[in-house]
Image (cartoon, rainbow, N blue to C red; front, side, top):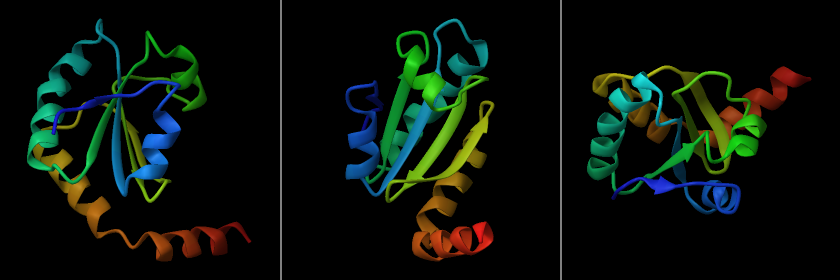
Length: 120
């Protein structure tokens, strides 16, 4: 599966309607973004059960601002509609593979309970 272009019109629905969604916030002028793009694309081909979204921060400035993006590339991971990972910087392929495995293995209900308990 190739990456999916995300924007204001389909971002929320994509996050809500899929079990696991990775989102790469990038810009065409960003050198690290261009270095990360083929790694991200290859991972999308190997992990067809995951949605790999891509947000062009130049075209989607309001979406990038709403997501709190201050540095690119920034990778976010969502599981069952909840943000479970967000980190700026280009990941090497092995680190991206580890992240994907960790998100797959994450018990989201337990994580939600733990987060709720920590807030109290």
